[in-house]
Length: 136
Image 1 (cartoon, helix red, strand yellow):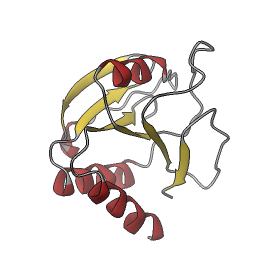
Image 2 (cartoon, rainbow, N blue to C red; image 1 turned 180 degrees about the vertical axis):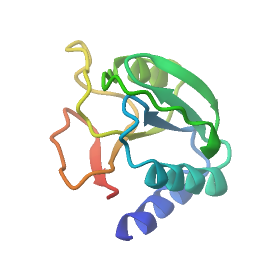
Image 3 (tube, rainbow, N blue to C red; image 1 turned 90 degrees about the vertical axis):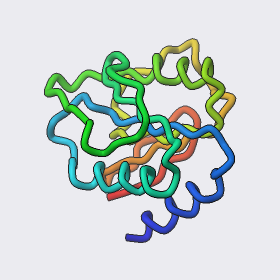
């Protein structure tokens, strides 16, 4: 689990920053155990992390808790609202667990915060901005 150490180090380096973790809940076929383990890591290392659950809309914004994630089966996701929310809330670093197959508005061509796409798959997609980290 090479990614585990990398994510742990990244969380620790941002101990004084405002951090959010978003989980793409658009598919109930997601690797739920893996995602829960990532959320638990944030929960233990940086308990003030904000957990955002979103698909084509933001479902919840709450303190981080791994047993509160609800998945849907429609497969539709849009990252636009979460990226706009992160900007409005002055988030320093956003970690986004997703397969990166969702929609981003053409009006968003960059973000002013750190963005890490945590991809729980062997396929690493191209992203318009931010950095991709494979967590599979």
